[in-house]
Each structure stands twice: as structure tokens, then as C-alpha cells.
Length: 263
Length: 289
Image (tube, rainbow over all chains, first blue to last red; front, side, top):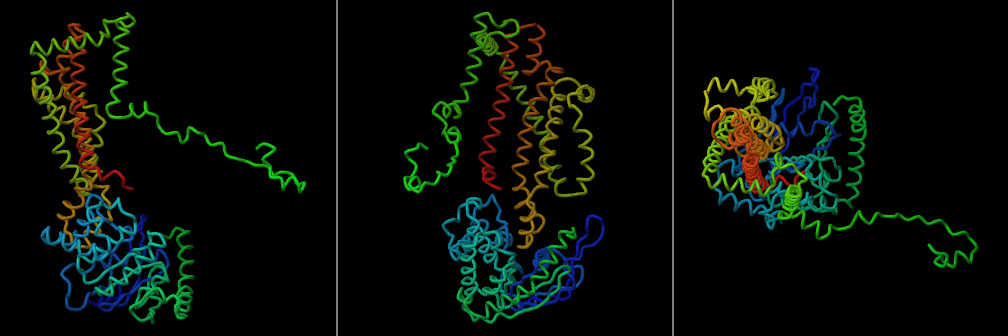
């Protein structure tokens, strides 16, 4: 499904009663089956945007629309969380089956589906383990398996690889590319990493500092199927430099704002 | 470093030997526990210190170092215990006390847990009930026993109510804080996947709060025992607590000790059983965070 974000604004009440505007009049769209990465300075409201898209918060003004025929059985979106958000007392397979359980799929059927997705992520051996027994990378594979097993229209990914080490992160990026090429969902992927965005995305949306607006949208020119060799393409370096120039000033501004307590 | 180990090349070049500094690592820092320590720290080994104290007590008593009128020897206490048991006095009273503990415990814990969960889930209930708990919690519950005697008359009922009130507080406080401390991210995760309020309660909040709820229930069990015994001291003619009190009044110190040992055993049983249950069902809380 296509996502239309139409003039969305969202703020929060500060402790002193004043209002902090986090997302201000944001408009953009994500096409069906498109892979879009969102980058922006830290604290710019990326996570707030994700909460709005994931149906967890309501915008103060504006509207978010999901347009098109429904093609999946599950929820509109499912989120892959930076800190995994696995249920600690459940086994991995029952974590992955959680979305199916919520909509009443029988125990047997949802376990089968969950195991298929664990196999797809290469972690079926850990089906009966508890989350705390697994490494960060394994947990995030389970997080992705849960999101896909729930069968959403749109996959929302909130800096999913930020908490794992650099080597594992590389592996997970490659695996995500492979999985996505076989199961094309609309993906909105939030990241801090310009390289990650250039590797994964069809299009990159650059957000500005608070109150967040779209600064720029860039189409990533590398053909699919894609692998790490795109980093050798001279356009990769070119785009990386350009995006960093966009982000640098905003990041500095955000750091100063944070230091002055405008958080 | 001895002189001969200095490299000859340095000496040949005529340069002074650079100073060498080494850490002197305390060897105790990495010494593994010895066999005796491992024996003592095992489950069965924990009997050893207890046995040692009893042994010293017995020896001191036999040697005349300990005044038998206050501290009769363990052997005499055991004899007294056997006497109470075989005369048929002990077991019925143990049954009466155990029943009061159980009833008081259930009377306190069931409403407390339900209320605590409701307080955790609803800020309205919390804001209305929290002040009531805050002002009643510090009252030593035993102080209201006279009031309970006025309301419920004599016999077992005021004692059960006392045990109930005393075990109410830790259960309600722990249930509430357990619900409040549920990882907010898990709730967001469930909502994103389409969970309703009921599903969030049953599939996320209650399982997550269960270890804390159970910790409150464990404390409540101990306090139900305390409340029951205190109540029996002061306001009962039956039960183990009243036996202890009576043997103190008629100055049969060995019988008094025997009943104390029975109370201690009941407390130990309660603690051990609840701890086992906790380890069995909430093992997943270990190894997290």
C-alpha cells in the first residue's frame, strides 16, 4: 500500500506546560513496495514519526493515509524495534507468533508460520530459546521474523541495527536485502547511517531539525538486486558527501539545542 | 630482576638498564573456592552452622555455662516437643494456627492483588486509593487488635482479620508497582500489532507483573504468620501462639521453646515453599538486564 503523509504535525506538552513541536507540517509519500530510508539529525522526531505511522500516536493536525487494496492479512504496519521489544518470558517461536496469536490464528498454524519465518532468517535452531539467551543480532533476526510473520502491509523499521556490533550489522543488512527481494513489502526504514540508507533504499528522505520537515528527497540510483559493491560506485561517494553536507549543520544545531535543554 | 638476567647487549653498549615495573597481583583475587567452602555453600551444607550453634548451646548447657531457666538445652526442648506431640496437644493447635494463617493470607492477598493491579492500570483508581494506603500503612496493625476484638468478638475471627490486614499491604503495593513497571515498549509493540486493552492486560501486563506480584505474596505469607501468632498471643485460647504464651505464663520454659520451634518450622516451610515456586515459575527474570 501507498502511504500518504499529509501536513502532519505532532508536539508534546513540556513539564512547564509549554508545547514542544516535534514534527511540524510534514508531507511526503511512500509508494507501494518501495523501500524508503529516513535520515535526520538525532532528536529530530524520527521516532515520533514512526509512532504516528505505526498507529501508536495521533497527529495533532494533518493526516496519514494508507492507500490501495489490502494485500496482506495482518495489521497495517508492523514495527521492527531498535531494542527488539521481544517478550522476555516467551520462547522465540512464541514471540514470532505473537502478532498471529493476537488475531486468533490457531496455536498450531501460527507456530508453523513462525517457524517458516525463523527458517527464513536462519535462526530456527533457536525457536525454543528465550530472548535473553540470544545475541543482539539473533534477537533482531527474531524481531524481523515477528514483523514479517504478522504479515503487515508496511514494514516500519526504527534504527533496527543501531544496537548491534558493526560486523553483525553488515550481515543483517545483507540478509534484509535478500529477504525483502523475495517478499516485497513497503518499507520505511529509519537510520542514522548514511551508508546504510544508500545501501538499502530506493529513495532517501532527509529530515531537518525540530520541528521536523522534509529537507530533501533523493532517489538512490543503484540497480537491484543490490549488494555491498555499490559502495565502490563513484556515485555512492558523491551521494554520501552530499547527504553528510545536508546533515552536518542540522546535527550540530540539534546538539546545541540539546545542550541548551530544549529537549 | 637479578643482575645476570639483564640483556648483555645493553650492558655492552654501556647504557643504563631501564627500570622495570611489574604488578604484584594479589593471588587471593583468583583463588578458586576450596572443597570445604563448596561443601558449606551447598544446600545440605547450610545445616552445618545451625548444627554448630545447637551443639555449642547443648555443650554450654551441660557444662553449666548457660542458665537453664532461660535457655534449656536443645535436648530438653526436643523432649518437651515429643511430650507435647504424644499428649495430643500439639497437632490440633498446629492445625488451628495453619488454618488461621491460610484464611488470613487469602483474605488479605486476593483483594490486595486485584486492587493493586487496578491501581497500576488506572491512574484514577491510583490517585484515589494511594493516599488511603499511604496513611494506613504506617499504623502497626497489631495496634488495632482491640478494635477487631470489639467488632468480631473473641475466637478465631479477629485473628484471621488481623492476619488479613497485615498481609494486605505488601500484596497491594507490590502488585501496583509490578504493573507500573511493565516495559512500556512491550505495550507499544503489542498495540502496533493490533492488541486491544484486554489482550495487553492478559498477554503483556499480567505476565510481566507476575514476579513482582508474587514477591508481594511471599511477603504477605510471612506477615500472615506474624499476624496470626501475635493475635494468638493476645486474644486466643487455642493455636500454637496461645500455647507459647500460656507456657510462658505458667513458666514451663522447655514447652515454650518447643512451641517456638514449631512456629519457626512453620515459617521456614512457608519461606521455602514460596521460594521454590518463585524459582520454578519466574526463572526467566534471572539473566535479564
